[in-house]
Image 1 (cartoon, rainbow, N blue to C red):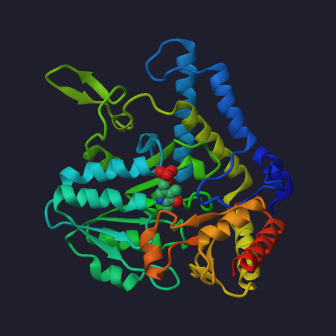
Image 2 (image 1 turned 90 degrees about the vertical axis):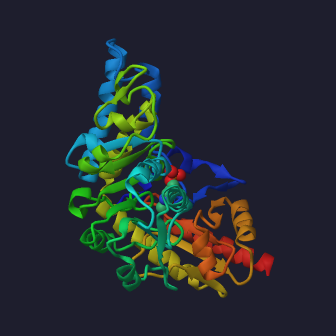
Length: 404
Ligand SMILES: *Cc1c(COP(=O)(O)O)cnc(C)c1O
């Protein structure tokens, strides 16, 4: 069981007020809050061993390099990768996806097919459309149903020997649906396609095991799991990472450079051109330690409790409709009130100190499916409480009264 009050003390921001009310932070699907241990790691880096990594013989550089490589090891262990050099540190999920989408340019031909899901974040749609434009490959979409679940029998029909790549998120950021990625991966492999899973929204809630999943690529951002912004990871099977060309040219990613020819460094450096977010990488490792010290089983159990409570309480409000009603979902509640615009609800709720997200959540195709401009999205984390949900319910009731 979680001691939520104790956990809340780890997060200095949770004591602040917004518009004269205690902050209720329900925008965790956009970014999580930062515990003191992670803040301390950032301060410690810049206060005591800030230096560029991998190139220096001096002590500071070696200390920074060691800390950075320890972080890579922690990420490797957390995600269950066999080898540390299969973990590429990136600026985040979007960057990770673009490394793969760009890399596949030379591996695809006209008429090849890429399958994505209807539940994707824009960062998981646009790079594939650009890849299709460059190569003449064709984008196919696994549709969704009213509950916000992927329609798997259509996926079966889309798969063929023309399928080269399948991309889907592990958990939808807009609706919270947990996708059946085991099945998606297994079926894609049967036709010889590679699979990339966007874990940005899953990693705050579950601990994926890339080896057990047998996934080809898995990506995530630190800032959604208590780490800082601007850093993330790309896991790739060694064979795939060796096959793909580098994404950017620059320092760190080369072995030898002459004006005639450059040879690239081995993994992981081949994909890590330029000075990375050193401090961010180190803090990412500390954030994983922190989350693991709480335990992902505990986190999932408690967040499910919040999800059930929140769903039940919100549905008591007349005219409130929840989008994303799969039985397999995490603690994200996307909803609308009658015909009231989500932005108006969000504004009133903010006046009462409550942070929710309104809009299309970078997933416009989902909003088009439901024929709505957007939703109000409340996403809960393990540091949230039922009392905070009660405050949200009261605020939404108030918004309804003021706006209808
Ligand atoms: C947040 C998110 C992204 C984008 O992550 P960045 O850190 O902004 O690159 C991609 N996919 C999903 C499912 C997300 O939730």
